[in-house]
Length: 227
Image (tube, rainbow, N blue to C red):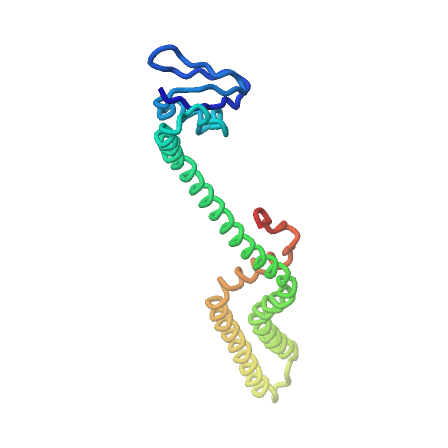
């Protein structure tokens, strides 16, 4: 019977089932086991976890004529175990590759975000100007109406002489016309501005609030795992 020496690498005995009496391999000791047992799943599972190993003396008890059978048996064990390790290795490499890709994408976005947050402070003054300009569209028209109303009120406060009444009345109508035109211009400008700026103004306000609180330090550090 061909036997191959195998070693228990653990601190506890390992018992292998056979067709007759079980074989016990003491902790950290070698034992000779039949060749057919080497090809079994039980030994293979122990070999896969490292609990058993083939020592340098594995073939010490094998006659030269029997060595081809013994080496073939060991080779078959390796070929059966290899897919476990190669499959796990493939999954591990894929996981590391995916994580590295995520790291790289994160760091690229991190750098972009830092650049934008840093630049946001310089945008804040400009967006404030844009908001002020938007408000000015209606403010200038309001001023025109106010001036026209003040001119009309000032004219009404003056009591004309009888011979000047016709001229006064003509001036009164002209001032009324000017006031009414200013009001129409204001309403028209407001209507146009409202259509054009209603959404934009809200967005400008939101942008201004974001720019004012922008802080690159809040983003944290880039990811360096595996780099």
